[in-house]
Image (cartoon, rainbow, N blue to C red):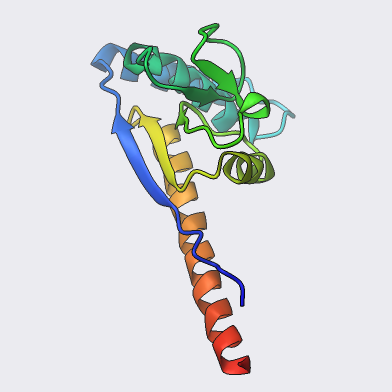
Length: 153
């Protein structure tokens, strides 16, 4: 029988930001919406997530390993999703915009506790809640699959 005990624990690490940074975020978001034109609307949360990720630099500890969507931080303890190493644990700065890339990250690293630097800006909460909802669907799928396997045995 398969072992389907691949349950994820999701933890967010609060990153305090200033009121001025919240205002800058809202202005940037408004600018993105105003200049959207015929572009894909999904670019807005992607760009906001990268922008919010830059605010997290103050919370990055040299003794920990982190993963980010791109190489913008230029720090030795921060790598991209394509560079993760098997069996290593990482704290997430920002999520990749494709779920398959995140699935590959989980498979390669084997982590079951996901730690995410969270500014509590709406874009971070969106990505965090999306992950939690996906995880809930995954747990429900596992539970239903286990029920089916038991009923067939």
